[in-house]
Image 1 (cartoon, rainbow, N blue to C red):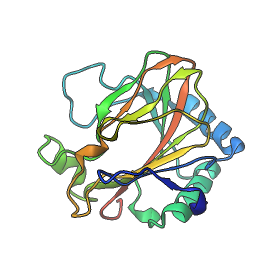
Image 2 (tube, rainbow, N blue to C red; image 1 turned 60 degrees about the vertical axis):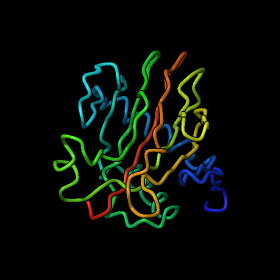
Image 3 (tube, rainbow, N blue to C red; image 1 turned 90 degrees about the vertical axis):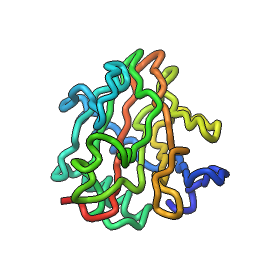
Length: 197
């Protein structure tokens, strides 16, 4: 699978895509789990904008066979010890829902930085997988490099949330754009500096 990884040419951040990462049967099972367990999404540092993140989210149980298969695929691709990973999450976006421009790392000067990073440290890598094709909308836009990725069933995006010196990289700012028609299902997996408790 690593031979299918394509690095986006930019000196501003480490960003990769891999098409056809996840097979159709796994995508269907994961969508079913998201549908069964979804709840309104939240954000760590509340910025007062109640429409900042309007999707629905669910934590996927590690005991589920399809989640275990996914974890193996991610470990083989990334080479990152699974012990450093947060639990896998699923997201569902309906028409009009979005996640406005944001970063996945916790702002070092944010109100909740100590709460979320005291044990496992900062987020390092993000792995995101589109589970379905979307009729229209729902793209992921990285404004700093002028790159927009359209939802494509099975496609994985991954990026390093840090610079080479270990500091957080604001160029990873990305926007989960509004879905115009249809639904969008996404899997997200974050990794930390230390083992996840």
